[in-house]
Amino acid sequence: MSDQSGGSIPDEIVPSGGHPRIAIAHDWLVGMRGGERVLDRVCRVASRVGEVTAIYTMFDDGRPLSDAIDGRRKIVAPLGTSQRVNRARRWLLPVYPMMVRSLSAAVRHHHLREAPIDLLVSTHSAAIKALRAPPGVAHLCYCHSPARYLWSQGAEYAEGSVLRRAGLGLAGPALRRWDRRTASRVTKFLANSTHIASEIERVYQREAEVLHPPARTDHFTPDSGVEREDFWLFVGAIEPYKRLDLAIVGAKRAGARLVVVGDGSEAASLRASLDASDRVEWRGRVDDEELRRLYRSARLLIFPQIEDFGIIPVEAQACGTPVVARRAGGALDTVIEGETGAFFDEPNAESIAQAAARCPAPGEACRQNAERFNEARFDDRMEQEMLALIESGETRKLRPWS
Image (cartoon, rainbow, N blue to C red; front, side, top):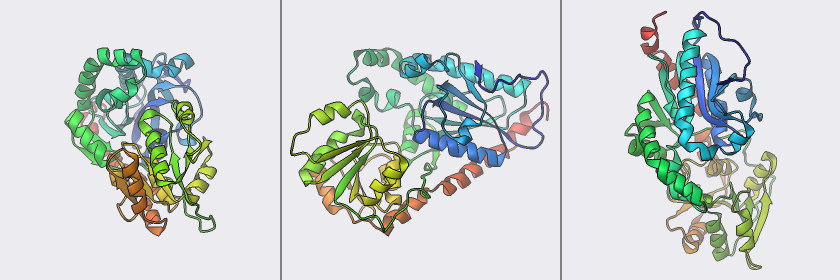
């Protein structure tokens, strides 16, 4: 077990002295994506409520993420700091239970030998919700999704790889049993969308309340000084399940220019498939300033995939830009038909082109809708959830040293 703080563990228990002590867990710290932006807010809220004792994680490649995350003590599972192992982490799915078990032992050890914790908070999309809190300590899980490669997108993850397909086929049944069984270790689930609340009920047979992820509406804002242009915008990783292929054929059917922001494993093959009649511009990865400028100037955002939540449509709407989205997944929570966008039902060019024709113009309605997902709203609700579990009395009642 790697303790990135370098501190020693005292022999005697040190009481928390009235300030709630909160342990945080996250699947892996290997980049600043949507899940890590939620983790950043969770760390900030936990610091407002009390003291963050540590972040427990299966993998950490050591890169800087944010001040709120980087300034915390990190407890990493064995092998989880190796760069080679980090790069191959998705191939290590069968050993995730062992890694989580080692982290559970570390939480209990620090709880008993260093100082007791009052709450465990996990942000889960792979395996970390299986972390076992010490007896009498509540476990609040913010769930981005039950593991997609086990429950909903196994075929997509296995596509193009005989080894991945074989591995999921062999290890999948046992891992699904483990994943479902360990849901009982969570005191309360928060889901990032209505869609994921339904998935939690389907997969884990547990109820979940919905708390949408925080969007940076203070950064992503409209600007009347930026002229709107007649192009569609696609933003995201260029991977098979993101369905950029649909955006391309839909834009071609509508005669629209398409600007693509992002990169990924499918970028080269999609670019090679284009011909002179395709009006597609590839921008690759861009910084936040350029992304905001593109949101502000696009006619619409095309969002052709099914996502658990999908923060990109909220960012676009925060800049006043409407969204054309697949009528499924998290987009049903974030896009309002006829007011801030339009849905398409069939994954084909004609359905997308028809939705784009119905899509409302950019405007204030989009901005107002995006404000429902701002950071302050998330922070206040998360603080309420943490305090409610801490103040329930169960942890204090069961502590032998209280």
